[in-house]
Length: 203
Image 1 (spheres, rainbow, N blue to C red):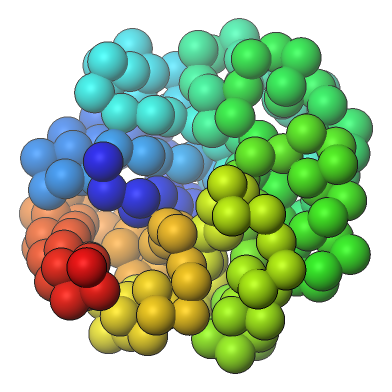
Image 2: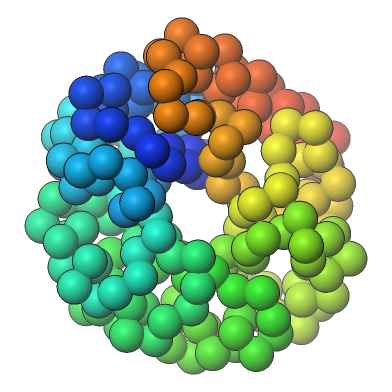
């Protein structure tokens, strides 16, 4: 499975299904609706109902344990945060969700792993740089994937993969509020093609 998370910040519920459909057709299998979007739980619930068999759906910008509870009620599974909060990770694990806390330093990485996280979101990678990611990967457990978010995309996938990125979260390069499904389809196809090319180059 491609390790690409579609980050749909600002997605209104009325656009959730058409956008979800083109993303899955293009090859995305992980979709995140940040909670600072309009009525995010409505969008997540609709995506889970329609595409839950085909993709891992969830929430981004999860900042509190009670939000993880609301996410679980929708049937969503991905629980993505911009920060590391031990209470959010614990709630996600208790509810059977997949926490993906945001980390930036070695201390945050190891604290998140100690709390039970098995996916780390390095954010923002534009600031950490490939050198920062490479240094972290040298000391982190090999079995814990690090997802590059906030600056990785079609133009530089290969560079990040070489630095050790295990997966990517793609936000504004894929979706901006107001984009219609056709626009998202074009962007998604470009991103997936670039990812596939970078992955084959790294093998």
